[in-house]
Image 1 (cartoon, helix red, strand yellow):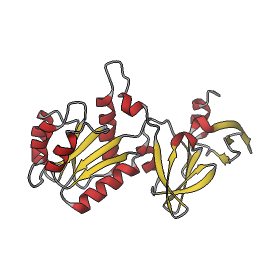
Image 2 (image 1 turned 180 degrees about the vertical axis):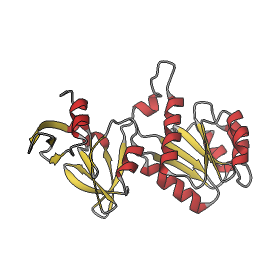
Image 3 (image 1 turned 45 degrees about the horizontal axis):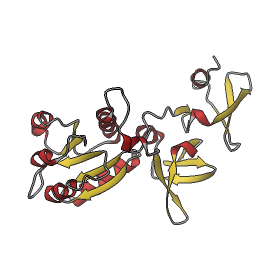
Amino acid sequence: MKALRIAIAEDEPMNLRRLARLLEDCGCEIAATFGNGLEMEEWLRSSPDVDAVFLDIQMPGLDGLNLRASVPERYPVVFVTAFAEHAAEAFDLDAVDYLLKPVTVPRLAKALARVRKALRGPEGSTSAAAQNRKPRYPVTAGGGVLLLELARTTHFEVEEQVVWAYAGEKFRTKWKSLGEVEAAFPEAGLLRIHRHLLIRPEAVIGVWSSGNGARVMVRLLGGAEVEASRGATPRLKERLGLE
């Protein structure tokens, strides 16, 4: 699944920062942010490389509902507001979703799924811009931030509300739960094999029985070995075509 590039128009700095962070936690890239509708309207005239726009409704100068008319049809629009009464008008303007503040990760994940659906062509293929990008996510590395490709990742592990990613090395992510990782990549087929472990099935290179055979040990690319829980073992075997 390719990372979505999102532009945001939101006049409240705190809300803008929070929405941008949640989108990044869901695996998106922030293409641009704007403090009012007029700035985004001007920016859209340059036909930017962006997959979707998130618009606050109540903004000075040009509100989100009026800004919608300036958004090219190829860009799906999601409205974000604290007021439910604008929902009918928003959907009349062909919005793909309508989020109420405070936005939560599960609800945002649903909105992003709708954005992806809107981006798909008549035969189900995504836009060329989205296809050319591989899903990535930020991790802490050497005092800075590194963008890792999901395809390089073997598994994720949560320890004391910190999610660690394994991609040859162990990296600290911004996520606090495996649920947030799953929400970030809803179409990636990540598999929960233990309450603290999430693996990428394509990274599995071997399995063997552990103890009485009810559980299995899993070997991943790079040599890491992890154990699947008793409850997750049948699901793992089914995913790998072993049952």
